[in-house]
Length: 347
Image (cartoon, rainbow, N blue to C red; front, side, top):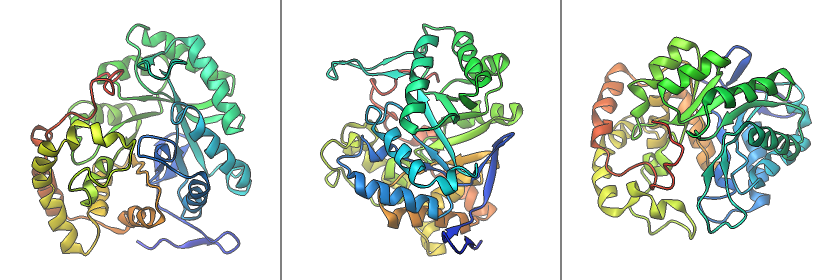
């Protein structure tokens, strides 16, 4: 698959596309911008803006952010991008997704809390519109589920925002099949976002079949297992100060050593095709369904190019079987998050 040039003026590329839902067609790989604001150590805004422009020039048409990433910082970065690249955004090709529902108290030493109350959702939506500098958000997610609030109330608020023209598509993150089905009865859910990769496969049991049944697009975050599936991580020594993986259960050295053994098949397949392990991991994920769009994030141009190279890789049926058997969910050691990070995940 050749990534061809679409416009001589901008030198933008054309990437294959996928349909997440009616009216929501995006590049087959999106981009997760979270790491430009927090969780993976210090970042530089000038470097971030340069890479975001490259993301667009390479044909990516789906960018994911959230109000909680850097306490609004990430949305402001995306807002600056949109203002400087009106040539693309005004065509309607570029879709921006953001989220609400996780609330940090003024005292940042305190634990976060999940808030899906209608008044909070509406307030967050207005703030995101302002930071992004747009009149309407393409995809607006509830980031985590607040079990103290009936999902019908939260969905009712989102439905009102759709009617008012403030959001185009409703999304949910990390909810159970039961919650997703109920929410979809209140108002059509366009997209579900959950963690999904070769080493995080819990969604395969109930969630993926339901999204196919209901015609809901699936956005896979952390499709490279927070860098693990790149094959470059052998210990946490190289992580920068403030990198949350230093305290992530799966990267605790004993668990990591066990998980690295499971990675050997990925490395072998990558060697066979003379490609990067990350490209194999993404190609496997893309093969799991035509309604799946992974959103790998990176702060390096080299890795961005590497990730997009996965679109040119087609794995054989035999390759897919080998990878399926190599890393079953039951064999991966360590939970996806700490107990604090699991708040609001409605498994």
